[in-house]
Image 1: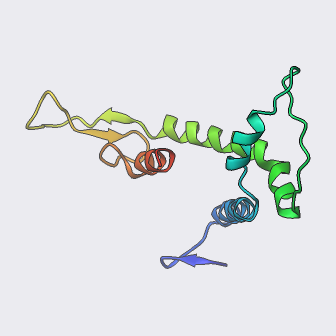
Image 2: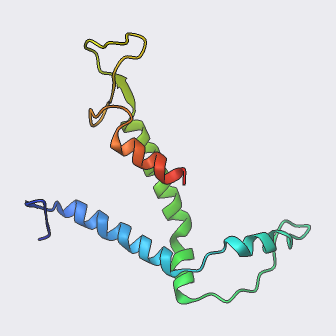
Length: 125
């Protein structure tokens, strides 16, 4: 079993890391549609559809097959993490009563906690 920092890895963590790495690898192998969407948006017909003829690789198809569900899953994860990692007043004595020390409700780190900062940095790039 995999070890990290002298401890046995939790099999759930290993499974989750493997799933995330699979999604990341599949996404990285697929083609970006960013530049194509600008062109394609000009082809919308009166019914609101775009007739598309595209050359897709196996990697593109593998990515597209699960992309919608994976995006929904990741947004739900993000919202759940934000629900868990939010500030609360830490109590105690502070030198500035107008700005009390706040800590994360979940991990008790000073606010903003590392989890919140990671989400914020990732989504604000």
